[in-house]
Length: 179
Length: 354
Image (tube, rainbow over all chains, first blue to last red):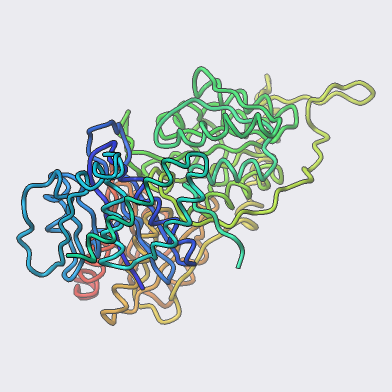
């Protein structure tokens, strides 16, 4: 298996964290993985992306150009990601913030109102986990149980954060299953 | 299988230094290597070792000089503009025969440049960017694991030769996270009878890089030159992939070699027999390995994140009768596998002599 995943949005949406969860879960499943962030004068509201390459083989290029799966958290991300997607790939679009539709017909698209679903859970900030759930259900690059195991490990001190993140993840999974 | 930890390249350098027994870290912040300094500011005190955030890179390298003179395993880390500032100190350390590790996580340049990854400090680092007849071993990691392993090796080689060693990485590798197998810590450090530790009961040690009378200085330079010769003989490191059946060899180091690896796989899927030679030491450069390859291979493609620096050493190694092409980016922009593949396709389509 060889998957190249892009996660993009603006600063504060938890884009890098979603990438980190994907990377840690892949490592847990015994795969090779590269996590590459955008970096610089990043700030809340500025553009942020990261890419995660997951493979059974040694990974070359640190960067990806043709994502096999991607999450667009905001409108600017969709503009960049849609033309870049590999044919047949899965694109998760955060419908809460992205009003436009994807015009390409050779890729799979899941529209998920991530921020609205997060707000229903009582915490607008976990929209990132909703999109992650939607992604791994549509394109099983890692299992949700691995992601949960990673979260248990990374967020041990804050039970409330941990629980709401888990619920957001499963809400995203359910959304893709139901659509 | 050993347990692996997901780690950023910069953190792997810091942890590698701690595992290698680094007793003192001195540094001044600069992106894209700030995570080294930040991590060391937490971990060195935890280990009961020295951490100093200095007022400048000049202070940092001269504190490394001082700590090394006192017999400590000492290091600094910086990025390109800071590395320029440290050249004077590195020359002094080589002249005074002091070990020390300098990490340069290269960024776009010249000038203030930008914080993207680059390899534009190749000449400065591999040829010796300070004044005088000196050389430093340059270790060029191409993965997060090597960020750790080569940092550990740097301390070992610095002590072995009593000379500074540079770990030459780039910003992309510094920021990337990959799985790392943690190494065993070095528990026994080499003794340093030459260090300035207080001369009570023994003859005093003198550490300097100065001779008033020019006639007295060449012997010291000769001593250094003998060490550099030993480095050339003993410390050349490189990795070769798919060289057996290759008709074209990509030569690349650091993060450029990662894109080259993908390009090589893509080319082979198209039926083009491509190999990869990756220098791990830039000084000493693997001239002999390349020269041997050139006995049966005519086409070499150099992939670098600079404007044609590294290619000069490749040309020197393979000779003027070989085709040596360049595919590159510079100024902080990554070189993508697809760009290298295009260059491969272009090169094999061109008739020899055309």
